Length: 330
Image (cartoon, rainbow, N blue to C red; front, side, top):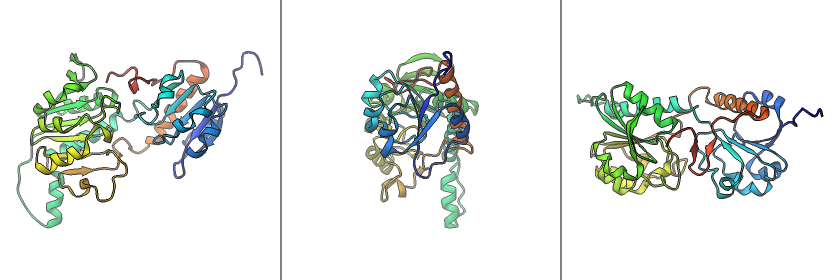
């Protein structure tokens, strides 16, 4: 090997049965030596590897395989959320962690707007009346001028805030730290003070990462402080919400409705109360998965692989102590 030529990266591709390969796998293979692995053999595959692509982005297999990661320098998760990755050994290590920051921002913001509009314009109830053959005049809610709190001020939260403001909604943010002036939210208050602010909101949108500070953030106290007419939208992580408390709040009319793209245990279990509650609207963790989303993830990884090979800074480095990309403020 010439003195000025770097060795090819040894890349482990973590996948699973039924998951399509990256569309640009051939281009990735031109740049790196690839070892394919499933969760059960990840530990063996990591021996000597310096990079890992978590294409099976829901997997928590890396924690169990960590002892075999003797040469690992970089882990890329093909997802926005990295809570499954942030076990203690990785967090304390010098391994760089990157994610798919930016790919899902716009699509998820559109999904949030659609959820709010469906609630305000009674679209779910209209469909139920249609199925029952009932013609019933009702008065929908004007969306412009309504108030929204977006919990989580990273990329997804910011894209959501910009879109909601564009249709005339009043938006405030809740984040790790309070600040009086923000270009996308205007005012941001601390998430720890959520109960003191949610009473003014018509819609509360959860877009925060799952950390120890945000787990169970929407608890009985926060729900009790919300308007009886309020609508909760969760496109973050299911564990941001105390689900038994939410079920009770919805059953008793403490809040009006919830649109849940994520739940604590996925898929949602048979017999869960959410399935049959008229004021709960469930979608199967799909808010960001628009046509071509996997190709966008693969292209993003390839660009980062080129940076890794050339020694340039990697994009979307996750702050492992906080669980989000360092350039984003949450």
